[in-house]
Image (cartoon, rainbow, N blue to C red; front, side):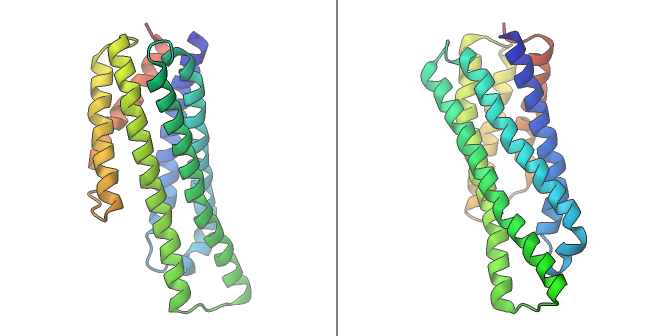
Length: 213
């Protein structure tokens, strides 16, 4: 079990690092007004960002698989809810990557054939980019709902010091609020991500160093 806990802690850090670097590479490209025309010169950076976001999506499945045997001993229903939420999160994240991959292929084709696309095609591109971000926010809703169950198990079972799940409750509630607002068109930026990010840095370090009590 201790090996599983350390491995889960390592995957938390891998997922967080891969997401931060991947989105840092990809998001500025997707937010460009001349996205398709300017994508080809930065396609290597875009592909690297997509690959890192895929690593994040795969890591969260590993976290769920490694933690489920421990969590189900304390609350099987909530442990299953957490496991399922991370699978849904991963599926949504992977689905969100399909659109940008297609757009990269279209950008390469545009350069190769000297194609010129009209406003109708640009509208489709904008919709694909918007779908990418909406799917991401839906993944964050799944993550936050499942992780509130996760923090409840940690708090009641005292597997870790109680200040950790308390930070997690605040972080994932804030993430849930931020993602719901973004879905309806009120993006307030990454400020509400901070408490959850603190939890997802401190908890894996605790798991690697000490594991669950």
